[in-house]
Length: 121
Image (spheres, rainbow, N blue to C red):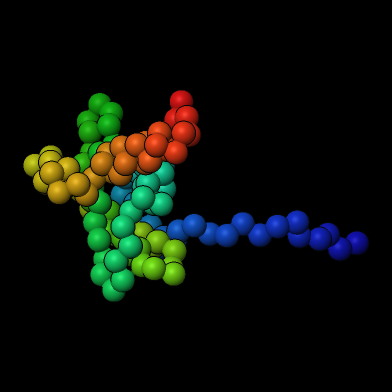
């Protein structure tokens, strides 16, 4: 008896092999936190054809880890996570000032949802 496929879930992002390899350098809980943060803001990230971009974040805990994620986000394509690297807190602050932090895009998402009347709680 053949089972019919009910639906196909479309992939919303892609992870490059190099990104995945670099992500394995983190403990599982930290890697899961990083992926969770970036997936949450993917729809908010700007689209720039032909160029990779970076966004920075922090995995908070006993010892916060500051990181930058390189990604491609082009029109008519799904985002591709290309690379991840540890950065210093000063570099993270530079990303915040340049409005290229996960926190910035999370705040943009909350503001956008509030304007549309969507409850974020």
